[in-house]
Length: 155
Image (cartoon, rainbow, N blue to C red; front, side, top):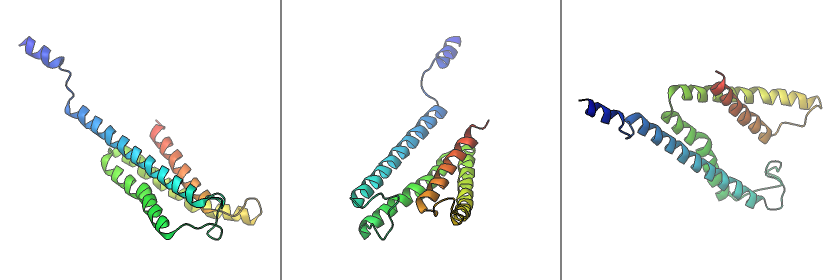
């Protein structure tokens, strides 16, 4: 009887929980790789499309344009990267992690809602340049990321 117990205690096969955790990490790494590839494709396509017309971040539709097919393709990739992957990820994560993500997303939205009027008022006073879409995106994106890190590691 003791030999049977000793064999079970030294068995090195992974259990159900370990296999599930490895599969979850593998899915996360696959999603991260796909997201990185999508980001590289978007950046490369925009860099190629802008040519010598300046920076994509400062260009206006009056000074730079891309083909309608490229615009539709890149829009689909952006929507997949910012909506589809995160929503699918919410179904694959535990409740605590889901709470951190949802709360950080809500805070990022709050930053966007408050950043524009504040920035616009400061620009009317001559203290800042006029608000830009890229600037607001960066405020929302970075604010959401920093909020997530704070919520995750605040303990």
